[in-house]
Image 1 (cartoon, rainbow, N blue to C red):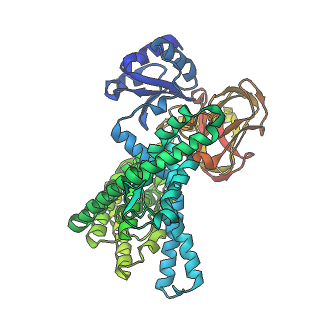
Image 2: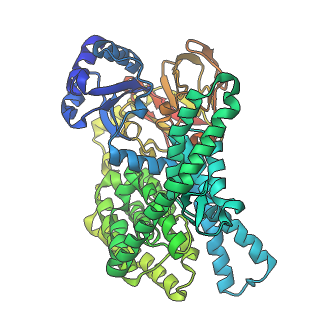
Image 3: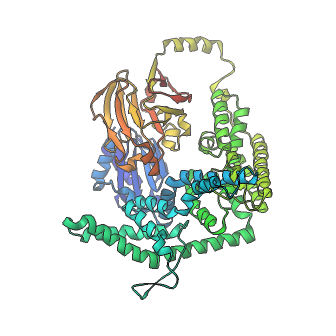
Length: 621
């Protein structure tokens, strides 16, 4: 490959060096931050020899090269006179993209805690509804604390998560959240004055969202200033003291009250919608939620939903519409599984469909409905119709939970049994309409392409001979966990086999082992990916997580270096799964045969749980 020519062509087609804010690379792709994405010639890039695909994701323009990407990136930097681009992620992406991206990054890590606490509240309401527990009992009070703790002290959770996003101390952020909820502050009677002349607005900050986000944003600037001006001998206590005092004053006098006002305005706006067009939001969410999920935008509605719970005691933003949409996704996938004559698609459709009905739609969306298109249209129709019914009947959720069949308890609350009945009817409508639409629209069943009913006599004679001549090479799983098909991975570079065929594993532990005997030909500086040249000739790429190159090696510990010989079963890398997930990254680990084109075929079958001794991929050569 002529790296100089390829780099020159790529640089020209992305709009020239003046259009590039920064460029870096991961294991397989160049990652550009472009000033104007519209100036890039996507079709021209895809036609270049050496370019395997183009992806726009998370504000980055990504050009897929493959294992030669390091050499190409070096040449691009040289020709474009770019320095170290490791700070590419801090380039501005525009106000809208940055705002919603920030909300997603802050809220995504606390979604499991929100869902878990919400389900405790929902189950408690269900138990009380059926008279199985007295609200005056100590047991009820204890479980109420289990369910309400997060919502009562939500500023602490948001402070910690926001501090990571704004790159300031999460512990100081937690202290500032504590100021808002401290008894000495909350017990003050209005009018409140600081220093006897600065007015302080009395606000109930427990369960609030926007105020602490603004305060931590202010902290990020003050903390950098404090670190800069504090002398080294006393910086360890002076910088935090300055940060807490200055941010605290600005927080309780300006940022906190302003954030509270923003929350009130949002609440008034959505209350108006509920009163005058209550059907609109559930209808739009029911129909278009799959597209929000594809972009991660569904996380951006979480703050608004939380504000509704805090101000109204119930929610209409996410639950009703997402219930309609998730059930539709699951139903469409199940129908595809039942109708398909292809063994693999049948298994995938049914398993992903059941998961979708429980509220986890990504396997159904990426593995079935989006891939075969028309089932996705059917899910949009079914989800929209059911969402419209949910909006017209005004169903509410009384706590957060993953919207699916198991979330019915969150509909028990102040509006009585009718709310639950309408939620059940919403589910039935979504199932019936989606199933009918899927059957009418149909889908392109790959069964005939993959399993022809008959072959000619000549072909029948050749096929056994080819099979007899083929040699099987087994590649063990480098990670213990749950095997899934590559087409379920939420990154089209892997799901569309752009860099090669293989499989993926959802890790059960943060350890990566050598799947074969060979040589570690590449151990990336960011430690998120390892390339191994096996003794049998296979070139294996182990990519730990999606977009984890952005962590720049944080949470990874390498036990080998580039060029080391490795033995099957040898520990190669350790990674902190929980920390990576908390930072907002998917830890699913694709295992790719990067020289796929040198073999007859690369086979992988998603078979559930796998250990590091189990065969993950079989290569036919």
